[in-house]
Image 1: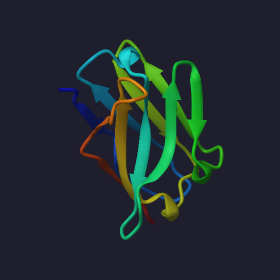
Image 2: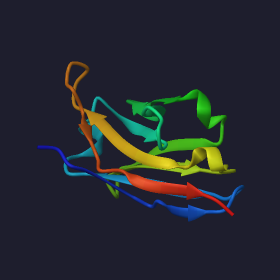
Image 3: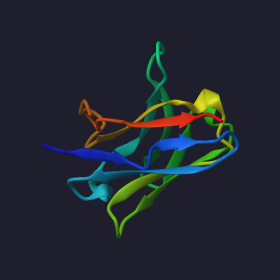
Length: 116
């Protein structure tokens, strides 16, 4: 069983920055793809960013403000977020798949609140 644990969420002011981390129970480089989704209250879960091999992909809502990266030493996938707005308020979930045919694994989520 694969476990993914998110950390780094919290309260940040508009225009501020935050970095989320996702720690995996197995080598982060063993995943077919790994990344982040978010879900705001009353909304559907939305794709944010993912890593597949050396390729990064971002959802339309990031607007060039987010950067996903892999820290092999820490065995984490990190999401650096900058110029945050209240629209970025959501629970952020880490996910990972071991193969293109697998259903994937999800973390429990970490709350990000952008408010003055």
